[in-house]
Image 1 (tube, rainbow, N blue to C red):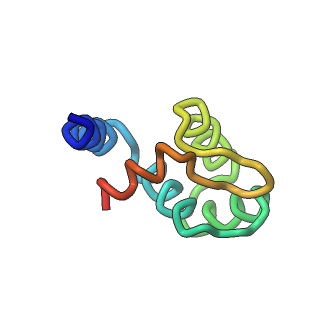
Image 2: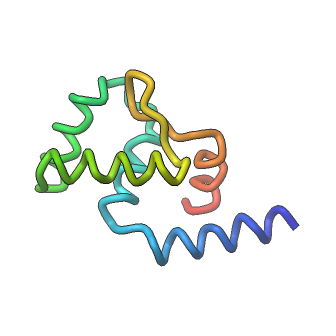
Length: 87
């Protein structure tokens, strides 16, 4: 059943996450070791959006339990599992 749950969660994430949120998840999954502040600058440049938009995305993904920011932006354990299904 766990595989079916992951597939269901993938469908929910595909429907509910914005393109910018998905980009940040992919960015975090690449194990970037930049500081959070430098990551925000980089992502804002890549997405052609403001840094405050990226901070809001980070807050939203943290609230969902998908990322953590301990010096850098990283996927949580469960987000890593979900990313394997998504990609």
